[in-house]
Length: 308
Ligand code: NAP
Image (cartoon, rainbow, N blue to C red):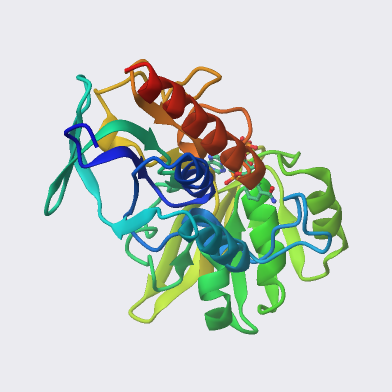
């Protein structure tokens, strides 16, 4: 392994990391995939994926991940749990410092995805896990026959709010504009769903509650300035995402929001360091683009290592 522990370390075991591992494993590189939590990333909390080609009826996120993981394991890829807290990647030997060890590699692919952005309103942190949530598939059953508020107008907010309606009595989806950002098919489904009501041109200003959890959500109409409380037991926040790249900050070029800048071969400005999937500044964040990024990154790693 030329003096390093691995040829390639892939940080993150979501779709981008899994695809990179598959390509690198088949190229017979020595590969370690590091994952902070369970392999899968955000698709683990995605109920149903219907825009990933090859599954005519769609597939559940956990099932797709299970398939990806089983496929990768056929090619001698090592997968370990571990969190990178800092790194020294400027030279040809990349050092990754974990909480309990230091690992070296000749190349690194960062595929750490994103986390949900917070609203930043009073009550959000206080009631997190006690009514405030970002995960419908995890928490929807706790809100059976309740009224909940959801926030956001993108694909996540629409898809997850529609999922919530299988459990709850009513979802008020608060969106700050009079037009949704989500793809049209989700907008059509939302419009046909009797349990889902969109509160247009509005924003959540406070999440209120008592010792048991959330009791009401204050919503302000941005056009009229009027504010009112919606009695609700839950508030689901889906207002976009932020990159999981804090550990890489200062080591490579990032955009204003902290997404890693790459070229079309997924190369960062540091030789031998790549980024793939949602964590990079990409125009589309989907499973299909994440796996494509992973494949492109891994195949460029092969050229990079050959030329080293
Ligand atoms: P997103 O597309 O960035 O949408 C975020 C939404 O939150 C927008 O509607 C935005 O409003 C709103 N928002 C942002 N900040 C806000 C604030 N402070 N207060 C109130 N509202 C706020 O994020 P996303 O929906 O999580 O999607 C992220 C990526 O994953 C996207 O690329 C999406 O396509 C992808 N995704 C795809 C699927 C799928 O293919 N089925 C499912 C989930 C996610 P504005 O519209 O006014 O900006």
